[in-house]
Image (cartoon, rainbow, N blue to C red; front, side, top):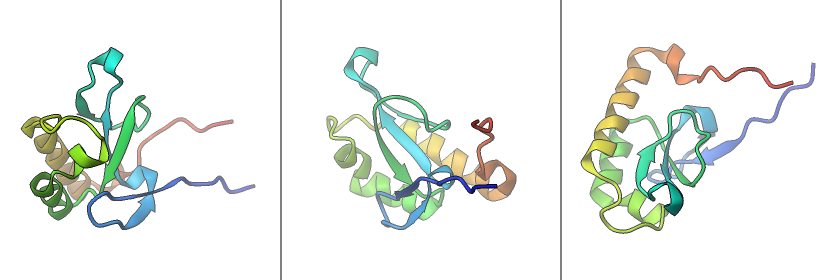
Length: 109
């Protein structure tokens, strides 16, 4: 059976490349949808996206250095504190249950 191509993305903080499904995605929604910055657990929402490792150190560094504001080319207050709290909870959930680190997308035909 032919092996499928796995998309590779890089963390906006540490620049380490990984499979897209292993990273957490943050997306700035289009202006017609409000333009806010939200976590995209499915990886399929429309809008400009940025990726971060599911590591506490990378998320903290992203908060301190305002990486998502730069990467998503939005206004300076786009990434609210709830965004980072949600990223932290997702990262902790993945570290405690490694099975959830791989999203269960239906197989493509």
